[in-house]
Amino acid sequence: MADRVKKKNDFFSVTDNQKTLHKNLKFTATEQYKLLRTNLLFTMTEAEGCKIIGVTSSMRGEGKSTTAVNLSYVLAESGKKVILIDGDLRIPSIAKKMQIDSGPGLADLLRGESTIDLSGLRSQQLPNWYIMPAGSLPPNPSELLGSKRMEAALKGLSAHFDYIIVDLPPVNIVSDALAISKYITGMILVIREEYCEKKELENCIRQLKLSNVNVLGCVMNGTKAGKGYYSKYRYKRYYKYYKTYGGYDSAEKISGGQVND
Ligand SMILES: Nc1ncnc2c1ncn2[C@@H]1O[C@H](COP(=O)(O)OP(=O)(O)OP(=O)(O)O)[C@@H](O)[C@H]1O
Ligand SMILES: [Mg+2]
Image 1: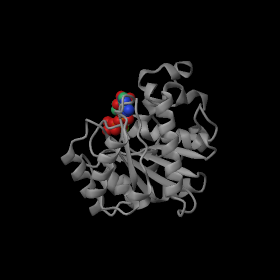
Image 2: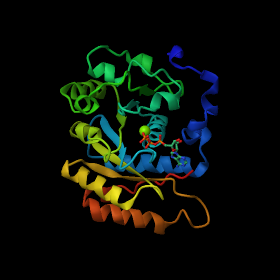
Image 3: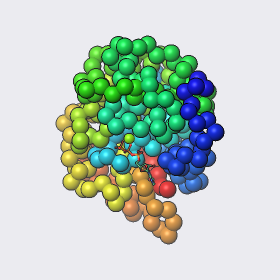
Image 4: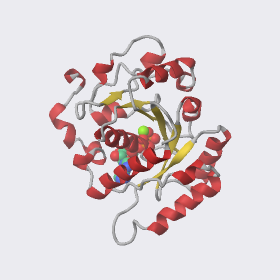
């Protein structure tokens, strides 16, 4: 376990990690992740057993990986046994963010080239928080994520965990998130304020709908705090927009979880 951690003592001073984990987050952001956790737990009360949650967005850089790390962390912090999987087999970032080795990981497992010892995936931060990196990058990520091996891997992991959080690439760029969607309980859509373009979001929601993806709700990322900016109005604007274009009944069950910096 210890040898997976490259810079044990530097962990909390890594710049990119300033957006991850409680020690680096402002109080308001921490609280929003906890709110997201609460909303998620309420949204999925009917689902039994291990819940598998994908995290995606329309475009690159909206905060999917940051959200996946923080969400999995707060779930583990509440006592759940959680594994965070880097399902971005094109531009993975979880290993870098968490300062762990990049393999062996999901891609190796799906290619059948390795069996992964779960105890080796245990995080340094919490005993019930596990992290699976992407592994060595494959030429066919979409096929791997939609494969029977993926289904079998998730089924196998479900026996060990309460939650599986899968960080995915953006919907509008590649089909990977849609490919894995048939094997997951639901998807969280991250929308970065003043970054995600309306037509991109519209296209993304159309794609999710066409593929019958169970969208649990959306997370507004990058909402600015203070001076009324972090207001109900801004949230409602996006939420209404999401509902209008999404038309998902389930979307009404979750109230997002704004995450500010
Ligand atoms: N709320 C925020 N405020 C400021 N910076 C943020 C916020 N959320 C994420 N970031 C930063 O934006 C960058 C992109 O975030 P992240 O890697 O989580 O996005 P992503 O959607 O996973 O990107 P990609 O599509 O490339 O995988 C990172 O440097 C991250 O630290
Ligand atoms: Mg990412």
